[in-house]
Length: 85
Image (cartoon, rainbow, N blue to C red; front, side):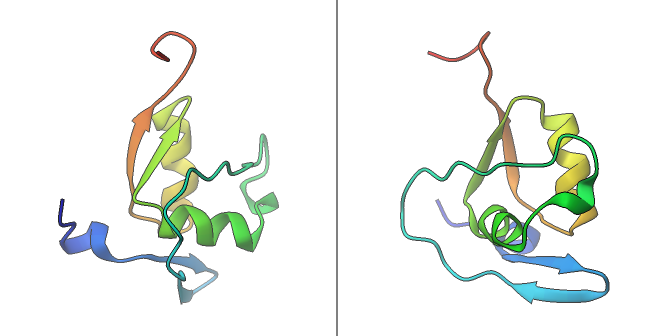
């Protein structure tokens, strides 16, 4: 599947600086995200989220707030106890 347009851009924004994410090796990456203050996220977490092909999260609405805050345009999908197989 070829990703084009805004989803093809793999970067994140801190302040007003856009930072290109390095490519990831094919794998499943688990990324810890902040529970409260969105500013508590690490740069490594931002880079991993920006470089991922897809972000699986418990609640896509909550994760979208975090991704939007840092200018990360990735496709999200819900993954939680009710749909895990």
